[in-house]
Image (cartoon, rainbow, N blue to C red; front, side):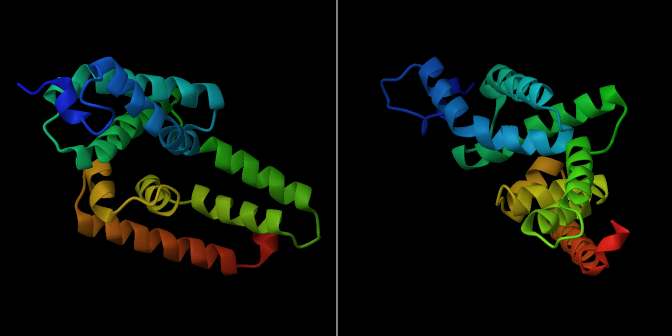
Length: 184
């Protein structure tokens, strides 16, 4: 059976304990996982809880993790995504509320003047309107700069389906952004 430090060997010196290496792993991935989860669930406190739950699950499952160090990032994103989806199921809401709420408010606040904030709001609104899987794939590719292979690993699909979902998402966003601004 693999030892925990086999999977986090790149997270510290050879003399470091498993706990120290895992702490380094937590430091490295907390912020990107938080941003990923926050885009999904919206609420700051809930996002922090989900990231903590992600690391707790990772620590408990690390001895059974059979992937390489290169696969660790995808594995952590998959745990975080599943934890966030579980939270959304518990709330019985399948929308990314923060993007919806923030985007609509930003558009209302922007008024008639054309501004960068208004463009950002339109973009966020277009992303918020995507179907769930396209939204996940788009966010991981666009915001987190993940490869299609990593995305496929996180969402449990093929590389081809990740590319297709990203393509459809980008097309829907492009179409939405070219529509008249009054339709927001």
